[in-house]
Image (cartoon, rainbow, N blue to C red; front, side):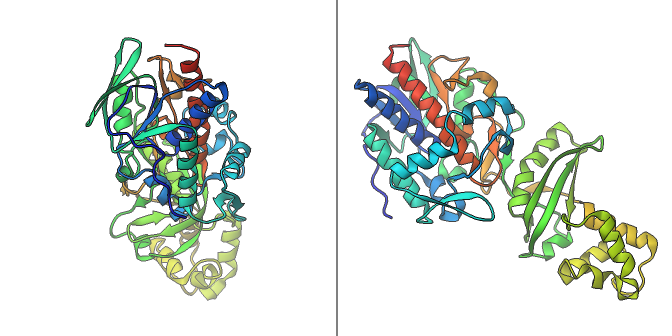
Length: 430
């Protein structure tokens, strides 16, 4: 599907009733619902969306490998991290999955559900259909676009907010900040939104780290020799006090730099945050998550002279099994001494990973950290610190696990911010 041009392109930033900074998923959705809110009343509302990119929607286009995992069939606050669960639940409840499906269906995009994951994708299997629908609906809602227009500063100017851009200065009665976090900076989400929020008195959580990002292991670690191997595994983050903090189970991919795959991506933000909050925390990997430790012990006991390699090869590849035997100092063939068996069981069921880093924001699919929801009025997504400023999307301290959850947060928070900001403008609030 070919993408339509942006609905309206303006030559210079005009004064506006409502300015939306960032025209990604959250910004487009906020603009659509702001415009629709105005149209229902029959009152004109000047809505301008500014974005630093020459082409809009780059992050939407690359999501889901170009297929765009729009949402998940079932979403609740337990799928997210960052701010508190009750706060996240309150925002999600304003625009649930059913309304997302209904919105896109009315825009001409039907979904199908991926059976083994529950992810919802457009029937076209193309993210271009999602971006095209959003741009079309934004145009129909009366949103004007100004891009490329990187907003570099924002200050209070009486009862308005003044925005500084490379092309000039503009003012607006209300602003919705939808700039994203720091992930995939080439798409435009380069952390600028955090600086803009800070200019108006907001705090940014610490640390701000990549989320949904592959993890890097030492160059000599055997996992890096298993590039391309994919299998189900379980990661468990263990606190310095020995307590299980969080776990992630699912497909895991060995790569030339370390580990990737859904289970790795889901645990990554927790591990990276722990580097600051609990430096002595450990990350363990269970290579056989569906096999209890007692069952593995029994399997190795029963193998006798056939050896550990024969026993483990029933469940794992031979290359991986040989590496595990070497790492555990356990003979791969012949009788398995008691202590060697115990070491091998411990390694298979809880190998500590010496993670040395991650692939960074340039690869990460999301950002952990941002503006705390405690600084936002959840009924309107309006700032408690700077009246007239609203937030939506990844600029907030909310990040979801892999599976379309971050998009659902963008839709829900964008809806709340867009309708509330428009209603405030229409009612004459400053």
